[in-house]
Structure formats: structure tokens, C-alpha cells
Image (cartoon, rainbow, N blue to C red; front, side):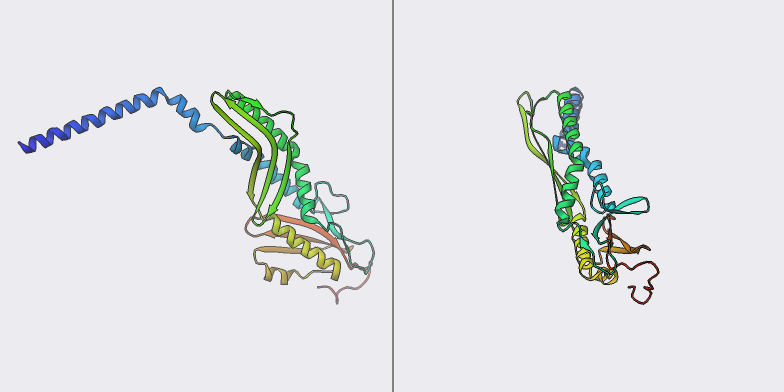
Length: 262
């Protein structure tokens, strides 16, 4: 008798579980569209991160390949690229003069200028996306701006564009969007400044001792016939490359430099 009661109890439990599962499936089917829209809706912050991902990477790559500037003026043409001189003299036998003494601030300002239009375009695309989802948009007439901050192991882009999205009882307000990327930009800039200061003082730089001291970085120095040196500084962890030029302690054509080259 006890065995029969236990068996009936188990059957009852299975029936209850089956009914619950059937009810859950029915409810899930009924509310599926609402659940799908909630789970797949992209947040404004995530939208901006995705939208700015390619522009930030391509802008950083362009600037680093051209000696830290978007539009080189005093440059050496190297492998089809205009590479800006960070240290330069047009005289022979003399050390170069540092052309960008505030290199970090200069590169950050170059990125700001290069990315401003992309930031504005992404903000406009975000507004259109939110409006298509039924949100009302209030942004006033404040101009979209961008600030670049490079620090150890990352670069942060702060896009200032106050905007509020409203729908029913939901309101989201943003004063800015912060986009962070893993990067060795800061280390590359600081290392380049060190190399340039050495060039300005002594006329040349020893890449071997540098790489022994900083194993995470790779440095190549390519000497040109008229005295220019192209430095290619790269991160082993991120593969980012910073290429810049220097002309210091140059020798006139025909001068025998075999005994003094390093």
C-alpha cells in the first residue's frame, strides 16, 4: 500500500511539472516579441563603442605611421609614407632640435581633430537608432566634441554630447560617452620622447641597450643616405607601431663614416 501511494505521488509530481512546462512555453510564445526586443536592444553606450571602434583604430594607426601627425609638413618619404621629423636639423655635424617637445599632448590633439567628425556622425546615428525604437530625443544645440587621454595600457576617448532619450516611463540621460581601448600608445609616446631627447643631445641612439631595458618593445633604426634615420618603435603585445624620423649629426656626401657609425 505504501509503495502504491509513493508511485501515485510521483505520477502527480510529474503531471504538475509537465503542466508548468506547458504553461511556460505558452507564455514564452505569447510574449516572445517583447522579450526579444528587451534582450537584443543595444544600449546607447554600447552603440557608441561599436560605432567608434573602427574610426579610433584607423586614426591611431594613421597618426602613428606618420610620426605622430595627421598631416605631415616636415617629413621624410619612407616606403610611400610621409614620416614626420620629431628631431631635425638641416645642417651637417650638428645635433637636431626637438620638433615636438610636448609629444603626448600633440598626438592627443591630433586624434581629437581627426576623430571629431566621426564622433559627431556616431552621435547622429545613435539618435536615429533610438528614435526608430520609439524614443524621443532631446539634445539641444550643443556641439559634439572629443577628448583623447592616453595612459598606461589604454586610451580613453571622451565624447561630449549631452543627450536625453525618453520613452513612456523610461528616461536615459548622457552628458558624455567614454570609450576605452587597450593600447600601448602611452608607452610608445614616452619611449619616442626618450629617443628624440637622446638624439637632440648626443646625435644618435643605441637601440640594443634600449630593447634590453624594455623587452616589451621592439625598436628598429633604418639609416638613409642623406643622414635621416627612420625609427620604427612597436609593441610586442599589441603590434602597434610608431614610425618617426630624425636627422642629427649628419655628414656631407662622400664623407667616410665607416669608423664612426654605431
